[in-house]
Image (cartoon, rainbow, N blue to C red; front, side, top):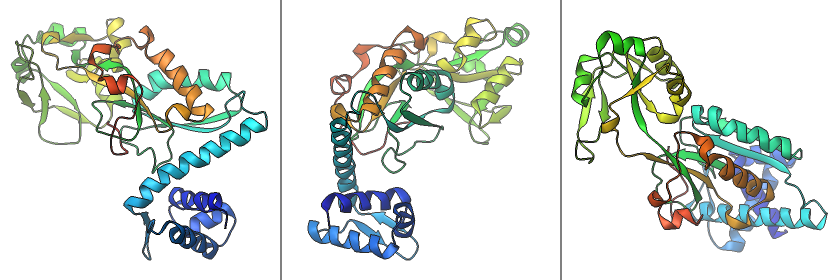
Length: 327
């Protein structure tokens, strides 16, 4: 059987989550899929899938082979498109993931501009605060906030965000402004976290180091950033958020930032993708546009600072890691 067909069948099994599901997606029987996988494993001399009665999952060798197979299949698709004269414009389906609020506020405008420029592309936006696995979930581009673990993904720096504490002018007029982190014990706190009895906020010390972790008892906890911010806007208490989440509200004077001198070190923001410099035109086109739009002053409080970017990441080289990014 053709080696590219075997590769494609293997990738379809992983993306569909099973042999039968892959067969349905490909329009063939599950037994045909099983034979193709067995033939591929025989050619390679290694087991690619662990099969049980309930699930199919890749071995370590299967994970690595899947990365290589996807790249090879993408190269073939690009070559065919180029030979057919379709190389002038990006085509296909693009999947982009980002944290919920960052996605809505920052990434969606870039996606809309990209779609306007490239009518041959469709985009699915997976805006979620959980970490999405680019390979397992078939995601092309991800925006991550926070320090990255080592990864085989390609990382491009966008800037950074700060953790800030803020409250409404009305609340601060009634209760006063905290001057040191310890003063928060006398204030009403709104926390974006699971419903636990206490929440921990870390601040920098006067000397600028990591300082101590301050444990607080919030009056209100919520799993939604938007709800926590709404409570602060309503004057209920102080909330800790990332700077981009309330940038417009702070600019309008709806919220005021406190304890600026004790803010912890900024968190980096990166764009991640898995295709490298020879990636598909649809991915390269979106990455180039996102870098142009999100690395500029348009990001507001998310500011690019090349001095804080490790050289290997700044050049767009692989982050040398496992295939997962940061939150």
